[in-house]
Picture (cartoon, helix red, strand yellow):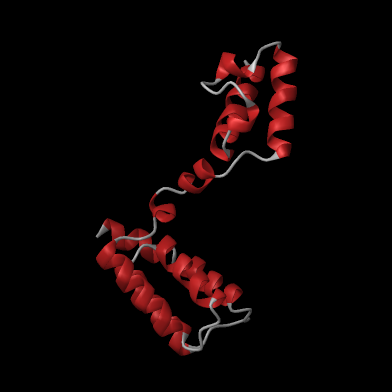
Amino acid sequence: MQILKERREKLDEIKQHWASSLKKRSLSEKDNTAIEHFIERYEPDWIKAAIDIAVRKEIQDYVKYTAGILKNWARESPPEYLSNPDVGLAKKPATAKQITYIASLLERDGISLSDVSDKTDFDELTMLDARNLISVLLEEMEE
């Protein structure tokens, strides 16, 4: 019951996401009914992700398409990025801005990359590595 209560608390958030994704000011009765039905069965993050997919594909009956996506995910499990949002960051190389920022933080502290990471070259860093390193280096600065 607690899970359902928590999902229902996200109802307005999902409705706003749905309207925003469709570039509408308000939702039709069909949209509202669908969202209320979905919230009873599926995780709010799943619903928002399924809506985004349906809108990107420019499907005419996006309610039916969204329902199909959600049913498939319930049977087969959702994409990994929904259960672990960091998975995408772990696959992408760090950006030039992240690398420059990390290098400046390391220089400020007078340490090298290998002092704080198992990576020895900036080109080996992923976006997840960079985010975590920046957090650690900034925490050390605050101490």
